[in-house]
Length: 193
Image (cartoon, rainbow, N blue to C red; front, side, top):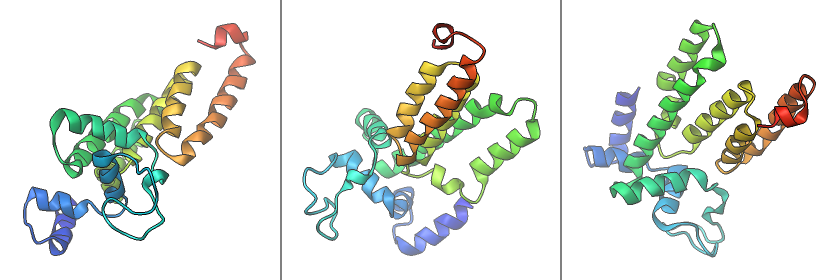
């Protein structure tokens, strides 16, 4: 899949190198994330730092992922496209490993989950400068913490979810359902740890 992607992107970008590949995949929302990583959020919506129509800004992109990549960039000095590939791939691998206990004894289901996530047709989105990998890891972590009855930690993971993508705030409903279910069996002081 990645070889075909490289071939397709090579037609877009004449520079036949790893850097050229990185520059070629720095399209769509990756451009916005790279801009936030390198320059931060815009103060005014009149113009974009990388050109484009007036009146729009990069405020629609939630801060958790670009802050993480920017922190790694300050440590390494690597370009955002490369860091997006590395950071996103590591976050996705982390999600695969953290998710294992969620499947219980269903080993086949877990292997299918891991296979489709790592090499499936949409795995591309988990290995570029997109926030999907951080959102996935935070989601898996939040549900794993709920499974273990760690409601405060699950709430913190939910906060990370809401700092990554808009729909992250919906995790509060899963947290409430799990908390109400737990309160039926234990006093609230014991359940909140």
